[in-house]
Image (tube, rainbow, N blue to C red; front, side, top):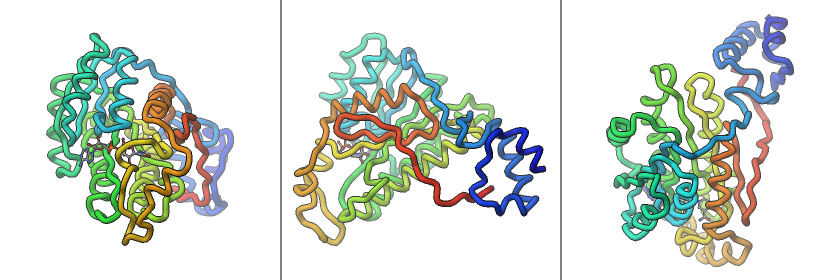
Length: 307
Ligand SMILES: NC(=O)c1ccc[n+]([C@@H]2O[C@H](COP(=O)([O-])OP(=O)(O)OC[C@H]3O[C@@H](n4cnc5c(N)ncnc54)[C@H](O)[C@@H]3O)[C@@H](O)[C@H]2O)c1
């Protein structure tokens, strides 16, 4: 079995020698690699870390929270790429912002649907079905809904994490190649706080760490589902979200003021790099967008499930 595995994968990093002594694990690992049609994550693979730049012209994009502060500037930037359709799902009805978007590119149809990510999964599926019935295909789903208020524990987890997981789960019905779907691309907005917490807002930071972790799993499942994924993780960006917010149990009443004493970026800088990251289209990308820069960060592996 070991030689069979080595023929499939040129350079194997098992993470632990445990696999080598457990034939069942070795067999399972081989099956996963073959099923996914990929090699190990180090060498770059179909489900792994390979970049396949995408041209956005003519694409259909769904943008959850596309009318927020980062969302609106990112939507504007996306429209300079001549999409076919931009469908914005947001709980916020920003009529002025929407009108501005509609004027940017005559080739792109911009549609708004009011959507609260905290609705049950079946409701999310219904909203997506309407979109798929109309557009037939969707190329990219951007999940960007977020709130920052560590007094609101359940709401933070519901919007920032459960809502994102549910919207992702809902679109799998239309994309999953095991159901005959064509695959697709998920772009999740995480945060630098998902890498290293703002410890005074542990609930928000934890919800963003969950987004980063969930997205990394989606990327690894791409060989099975046909759906690739990456996260876009902004550093502190000057939006209403960070102007004033509550810390957990009021551990630091001045958390917002203290945070904004340090370097930040504008929504435009963030948006430009956001769309660059989308165009790079790297499955498993962990994009770090801080102070006008864009970097694909490396996540250190401390443990491997070996399954
Ligand atoms: N501003 C920053 O420094 C920063 C840094 C890292 C990550 N982020 C993330 O970027 C995203 C956008 O944040 P922003 O700074 O532009 O703030 P924002 O408040 O302007 O945007 C938040 C967006 O989420 C939407 N939203 C909130 N609750 C929702 C719900 N229940 N259903 C659907 N949509 C909902 C809002 O309508 C809005 O469009 C968020 O996910 C945020 O966590 C922001």
